[in-house]
Image (cartoon, rainbow, N blue to C red; front, top):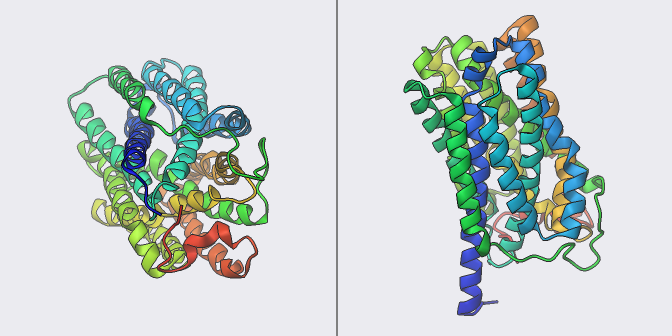
Amino acid sequence: MGIDSAGASTATRARVATTLFFLISGFGFSTWASRIPTVQRHLGLSEAELGSVLLALPAGLMLTLPVTGMLLQRFSSRQIMLLGAVLFNVALGLLGFAAHTWQLVVLLFCFGSSRNLLNISVNAQSVGVQALYPRSIIATFHGMWSVAGFVAAALGAWLLSRHVPTGYHFAGVGLVLTGLALAFFPGTLRIPPAQGSGARSGFVLPDKILLRFGLMAFTSMACEGTMYDWSAIYFSKAAHAPPRLATVGFAIYMIAMTLGRFMGDYLVNRFGTRPMLRTSGLLMTSGLLLAALWPVPVAAGVGFVMVGFGVSCVVPLVFGMAGRSATLSSGSAIAAVSTVGYFGFLIVPPVVGFVAEAAGLRWSFALMSGLGLALVWLVSAGPDAKEQPEAQLAKLAEPGNPTQP
């Protein structure tokens, strides 16, 4: 069904505005990730201590998931998205000025909490915008998130080479991103709370189908969290890259993830979701094992590229399917899946630190390679989506069947 010129204009404005908020999320988070080694040196933290400190960010994210789910039943996702963006950037600006470990822990908790508000609401917005288009655009939104992450990583490397203090770096980025959020907010989509007939309100735990999606998201988010928090440190300490190249490993990982997301819609329409997810798992496992078994910059870099391609489309596809639930509103369904998936951010990156302290970074990355095998098992062991009564949730799994509004 076509739309008139006014509707097309609204759809375009909403798509641009939603893309901008994805950019804000990706740029802000990667700004923090690009300077983790600097913060570690500044506070004199060991790998185990850093792992414990990093636990604060996903803890804040997880503990606010029920709150976010309930807020999305009371207010429009665009309102929660703006609130999350402002708080997210305030927390980012303050992170660079943490002078003590306890201050860093408190600020990371706030950073994670605000990031959750922003990410769940922007994904709910993306599902609403998707309904205005005849073909899938979900992966592209996440691709733009990755573009922002890559640019932020490159900016972080450049500012580090110029010896720009972390505090000024973070504060400047936070101010610019806040201004962009306020400027583009009027174009966001006005979605009423608890949209959808028969959708249950309030925060709910995932049902059987959503739980399976959540476990798939867990493997990808755990791998992503490992790369965000530890790739630069691994590249420097395990692969023995020169200090000026410490952030290169993270940057090339972001490039690969970005390219994978922009290719995602085409590949899913041609090959189907299940083959895509299996391939993603194999790439994650192979890339992490390559970096662990051959710890030199070139091999580790190739491994990081494989991991980037592997994780690129898992979360966009899972969130896209969950957001089209027939029994939950899009925000509640995404929050329910995120409850399981975000445990990957909560548990795995700190475990990497503990294993690295006990046995070395190489062993920790080798252990994390099992995440990809777990994804392959979840895809292969689960019943085919076509045999499920809830097959509406997995409509993307059919090759050549684009998402419909």
